[in-house]
Image 1 (spheres, rainbow, N blue to C red):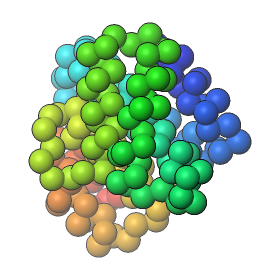
Image 2: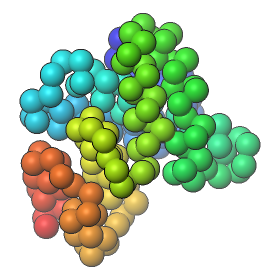
Image 3: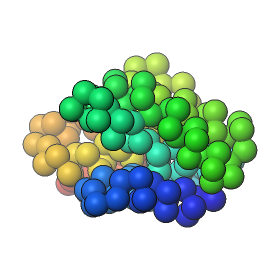
Image 4: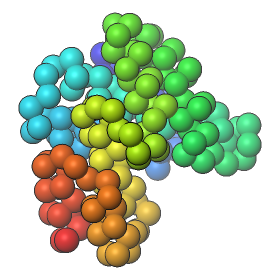
Length: 161
């Protein structure tokens, strides 16, 4: 199912290598963090599915508004994510939670589960690199965002903090 979902997202973001590579990296890191943190199979599947589709709202937002903020991604992403997850064969409870994660992956207060925490950390790890964030910005993100042992270790190892 995950590979079917990835292929659907690659088709969805066709000719946009940056976005395709972004979600593939976020998916890989989310899966790694979830596995090392010892999440159960269903929770790992949910966070991995959400990681694949987490930015699906960007394309819609850019078409409607010319740009797409994090909050717009959270609003616009879940309906398209739901269709894609259903088409890939995910069960309804996984779809609902994954869509919730998509709808909250730019909301950093009141994180209500390890799955959302992991998605946010994986997205941050990729964004910190892709956006060329300064050392001070990385340290600030490390202190304010990263909570899992694995995410903190990855951030330290990747960025030398």
